[in-house]
Image 1: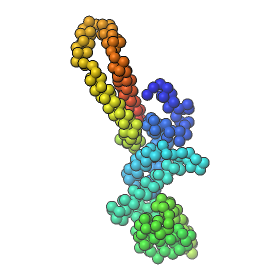
Image 2: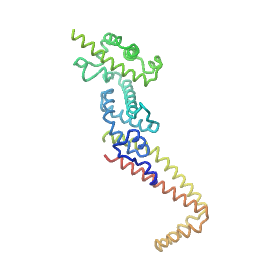
Image 3: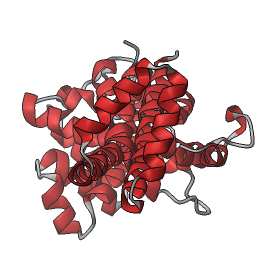
Image 4: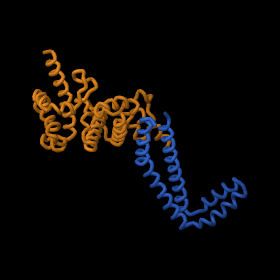
Length: 205
Length: 108
């Protein structure tokens, strides 16, 4: 590389002051810049992945895959209002986590306990409550789902109670798989909230 | 190996195979082609024999020999040599770039 080209690649500001999208752009020519992006987001992304898989080991694999995807698609990323690098990358991490989680589910059968919303360390009523035990009380689950907004409850019902695949649900709902995963994630979060307040009110009675 | 190092090695591999390897392969093929053309118009063994003889007489003798040969060669041969030198220089630069990048990502 000539000195002139090298000057074009060298950033004007110190690396710590560079925006994420600038670092991403620089890393396409010099991969060492990508290390700064990893350092910035590794922990946050790890937390996101762990919240889905509940396994640090699995999450490390997910992070490797997600960062690779981020780098591979880095040239396509364009900063637009409301679409920051962080949200774009976060979406990749979440999608990779979900895909990984689905693979785990297929390979090992019952890994539902990994679910971040239905299985939480801060158990809903203070006692450990895993998804397996929740599924033993399908009627309670169905009652909670009924209290949720119709479109979110329907997704949970199809996925957890009717055991339908992502593909089938996405087709039935006429949405993409990615949108479905995001909606399911929101639905599960709401489920937890609804379930928690139900149990609390029952305990108060 | 920590996670960041593992990811960076992957990234380096991608970068190497996307940005450096294709260019180097193209440059090497180009130099091979240029050498082939060069060999068809120049008696390379004889030139090397003369060059060895010139080297025995000292570095200055060799430099004078190299310039004399280049000056007296055909225009097409001059272009071939120049092209090979330029492309060879860029190949070395790319190799250096790959090594420097690897050294950088190895740093904690």
